[in-house]
Length: 480
Image (cartoon, rainbow, N blue to C red; front, side):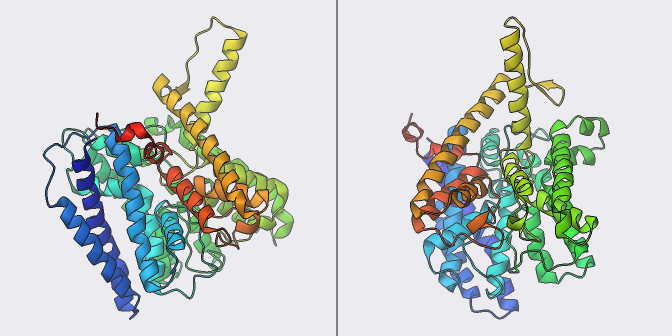
């Protein structure tokens, strides 16, 4: 284990986090809020620790997959801990476990909250709360790779693989640092376009910034108590479109940039993703038609909630907890499916679901015809055994964590639907669940123990489970 290299990268993470807190301090200065002093204090603390850790660059820059996973997991934990301190120091969330829950929910783009109301919070706190979504959406280590050649020797890929969502990560161009720059360039471009369209719909500047952060990161922290419900139909429609766009694999946008329409048509995951959204929206519209003034409004709200849930954003325009059983069941299923790999969305990812169904189909064929040789294909290519094995292992780990988490938070003695959807909402980085953790409620009802379990779930879900699990494996920490 190359500990010196791990600490060196964590040092840069702290320095970057300090820089990323500066906009929140500026917002505090603009609105003349004393809470801005909390950001100044945390910026100073991050820089003091960060500069100390980077003062001596390591001589050995060899960086394997094990170091990559451990570094990513530790970086996200430390980043969340430091990110929670402004909440504590400002008094907005004085309890450290609650502050950690809110911050981890922000960075992991979950959007689950322990706050009963947000409109009374200082603007700088609301800004930081939403900005954590934008930071975590693409990943802070991907951002760091844009700026610095940290490891050299081609080891950057081990960092990107550990942080990027989906069953596999590929380079868009030969150099990983160039790939990171392209990803953030696309991310920034889409964010700016959404911001402009929201401003065109007369959304206030501050609201447009925070909403863009939440949509781009598919996070879902709102700055209004009714989430997005109080905004116009136009603004809700813009948010719906961009939630869906940010849930698409960014490789698709890269192919659009390169003007390769034939290759775009081969992106099966994006096709399935859009098809699931279309079918789910139509079915839900049919069931909730009588709850709205017209079919058009029913379709509008169905599309918004489907887009919000499948992309794991978590925004809401209505209390879907009051919808009939079938629409609520569809939304819960969408929580598990999630968005595309290589997007800012969470969940199991559409590509994994497609691969699991195709692997099942092949296995059934082998039962009927034992001598047959069948391969699993995706995007017209044979899927390697290693990729399939990683999908199977992910599913096993996912089910075990889900079952254990549901059991553990059962100590608080809430109903099964509440606990089940609370775990689903956090492990899949969704935000709201059903019943007592529905869109008009929050997670404050849980004990500190249960919140720690859900914090683990949020981190595990965002980092695709294995980097977090490796922290608890004895073999990870062996020197050789």
